[in-house]
Length: 172
View 1 (cartoon, rainbow, N blue to C red):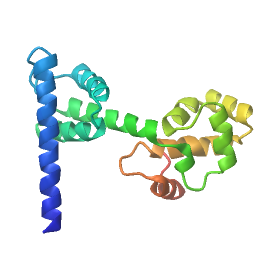
View 2: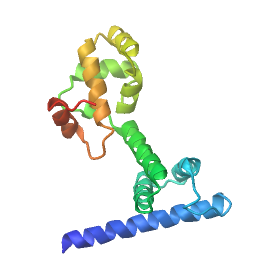
View 3: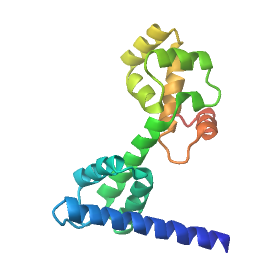
View 4: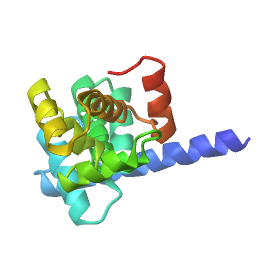
């Protein structure tokens, strides 16, 4: 019974989020319908929502589910990617289990505090080498941090789960 109530609340919330997105499109995008919307409209809604203090991640989840339901794959994937990017921006490196705090402090001095910043800083072999030289963090540990940050892209991955998957050999 409790699960059914929870599901109903989630459905009602998603419906409200989609309706608010539709109202945004109608008002700010020349009466465009949700079916006519494109990637740019979705990104514009995100910016608008941030300016208006909306909990935009929740809206994006609802919009993603809607586009999944109507089989509009491109926008479903775009909404999902936006959720992932937002999550990476909020995921702090210090929250990963088993990472030396001395490394976290060294990375912070380089302006790297989040999983998103770590992925950008460790984008390729050259950047990882520079990061290792600049911080004194061994190259294999820089790679480990990049791989853990990559794990953080997956929805539902929290500090412990990312480490467990990494330890089990799932590192990309």
